[in-house]
Image 1 (cartoon, rainbow, N blue to C red):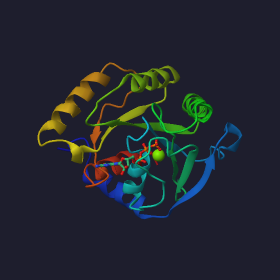
Image 2 (image 1 turned 45 degrees about the vertical axis):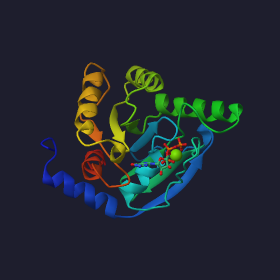
Image 3 (image 1 turned 30 degrees about the vertical axis):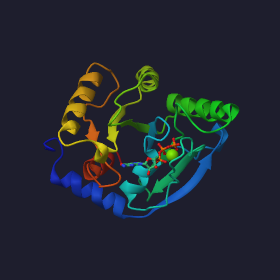
Length: 210
Ligand code: GTP
Ligand code: MG
């Protein structure tokens, strides 16, 4: 299955996420970003797709990032420090959110500025709900990242909600979708923060960047 990842990388991923990980700060404006002294991996995607839950699942820490059934939970850029190696960034979602319009515009603008112009940003993990596939908003973000030459990796979420056999199909369709996109990383991961599916591979992908 995971012919693209060997056991050394799986072990590196396991070790990276077994070490110290802590919330560092939330940024509501560009001036509040931390120094770009460590590589950053940012988690982006539509509201409610499971960004905060995936960070918790990857780190094995239930309440590190705040997750919620209500779309629009994360409203700042939240930085988590993984030892002395890297920072994970939990971004606010795009699309529908239960929040006042002015606030949505503020965090959406900030997120786009960050994605477009952050030198420390090494990869964007772009989450796609496995039940829904790539939506127009996702395409807009891919366009922005292609233009800015920021590498992004698609990760399918909530695979536990699929019927048996559906996961392979959606993963193949998603791979075909990104095949000709210049900044898309070719390996698409299928994950579930509920069951832990695919998390070891994603940890290995991230360890390769640390
Ligand atoms: P915003 O911060 O609002 O942009 O949302 P988010 O992308 O951070 O989503 P969040 O992690 O808060 O999760 C949204 C909802 O999806 C919560 O009710 C989670 O419990 C649920 N969820 C997240 N991941 C999974 C998963 O792998 N499987 C299932 N079944 N539910 C999930
Ligand atoms: Mg969130």
